[in-house]
Image (cartoon, rainbow, N blue to C red; front, side, top):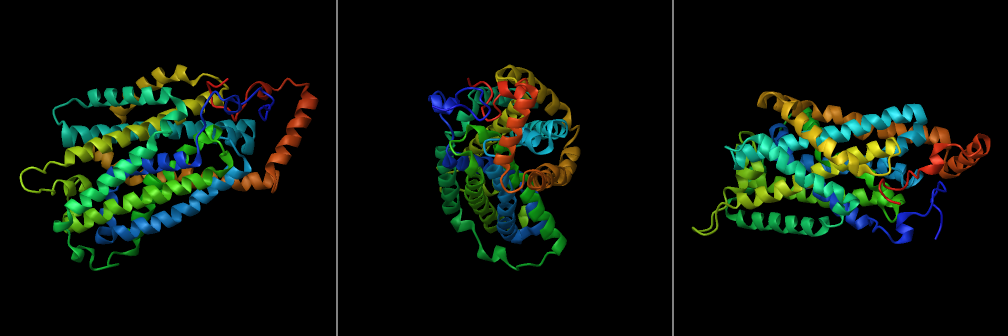
Length: 406
């Protein structure tokens, strides 16, 4: 057994106290995260219509380049979450500001996705149920998942397999209502429309898996987190592609007139009088995946805050942030019009956190530490320890250990 990188004691994984995440588990978890956003791809159909399948493919290819940036950060600073990564790259003062911005971003994702989940339930399933009741029920389940820590990602493999099976089954059941002519003509929209469709897909479902960088300290091999996230892009992107192809083939021009194309396409399934109303099954899956996505964002926000202030036990924030998320969600939009307007500008908001800041981090990392940042950081850490007499508070806190581990 060896000491942790900062000399703060044994790592939990080396003591056998905590099961660490494998790359495969993180891939399936990030894929499930992407699938949860299938409710949010309405704008893609509006902009690119029957060419939406092409927009999905292009967005997947571009997202792999962006994930490559995340992977390079993960290799240069293995085991560091966005909070500790910001401090390591930008320094203590600027780093804390950037880390706080990311915590706010993760929290806003939890709030906005809870609002989407509540709207879906009250509009499509339980129209007479007060939306606040839905918010509270979902956030209670999320709080239970968050209390389990990174272990909530370990059970996503079976869920992804189940979701994939149901999606393929839906396509088979809808086969008699699908028309290949619905994919024609090809490339008839203005270039601007394709750009907006691809940009929306890139920022909302695909690159949002940056949030899984929060699990870097909990991985068996944190240096390959980029490869794990690319695996999630391939799996989740493929499932998203299946959804879009099915919707286009089944709905054709009705795509741009329905608020939830996927839900509408599944409603078309009718086999005799015994196999109908399968949209309830889809709704159950969507609520489950939404709950998982909110849980991950919830976890990232409170664990990020705990790591920022070097608080070992993040569980103390679960109740406070749970209430905060419900209250904020209740007042975030005053009308459906405001919600729809936000969806148009949401990709621009996410660009700062998912593309601009990671690229700046990578550039600054190269400028400050050269090709071998770990050696430079180790050397500077040794010098600081010698000059400060060992009084640096980083000696008592291991940024590569998840809060709550001992």
